[in-house]
Image (tube, one colour):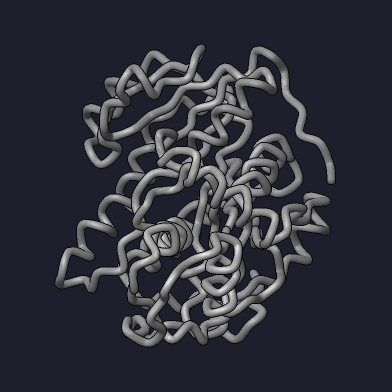
Length: 312
C-alpha cells in the first residue's frame, strides 16, 4: 500500500471530527504531522479533546455562523464526515437529514478559503447504491432508497460537478460497513457485542443479508492516503474489504468470541427495500490508491470486543 505524505505545515480540517471515524483520523493525522482542526456541531468536552487539536463548534447548516468561524482560517485539506446515519422516510424526519448532509456540504464549500486547498475528501455511503447488483462498483448509477442515501448521492454529484467545471479538488470515498473500537453503542457490531456480554436474549434480523465490513484502522489509512493523492480528483472510490459475509455469520462469530450470547434471529424486520447483497468491487481503490484492507474480520472483531469489555 502506498504511504501518505505531507508537510508538517499542512493544515487539516475534519468536519464531524468528534465522531467515531473522525477521532481515529485525527489521532493518526496528528502523529503524521498534520495541524488538525476539528469542526463539530456539539461542543467537545475537555476530557475528550485531543492534545494539539483545535476545536471549532458550529452547525454547518448555518451558513452565517459557519462563515464567521472559518473566514480567518485557511486549510490545505478538508475531510467531510459531517452528518449522521438516519434511514427515516422523507415525511418522517428525512427532510432534515437531507438538509444536514446536502445543504451543510454546500455551505462548507462556500465558506472555506480555497486559496491553499489541496484536497477535499467527502465520505459517502454504500447506501448510495440502493438496489444495484453486487459486487457494487463505481460505474453503476446510484439508486438511493432514503433521504439519507439520496443526500449522499446529491453531494457526490455536486462535488463531481464542481471538479468538472471548476477543478475543485474533491474526491468521494464510499465506505461500506465500518466498525472498530470506540463506535457508538447503537451501531450493529457494538450492539451485538453488548447483547452477547449481557447474555440475555436480544432481537436481531434473520441475518440473511450479505455485507462488507471494513475495520476503522483500514478506513483511516485510506483516508489519509486519499487526502494526499493528486490523481484522484473527481473520482468516487469504494472503500471496503471486498469480502461478503452474512449478518448471521457475523453475529455467530461474535457469540463464539465472547463465549456467550442469545440472539433471537428473525425478530427484527428487514428495512424497506433493503438490498440483501451489498459488497464492494474494490479494484478501483487497488488501482488508483494502491490500497486494500489489511485487518481480517475475526481479527477486527476480537480487538473490538476486547475494547468494549475493557471499557465496561
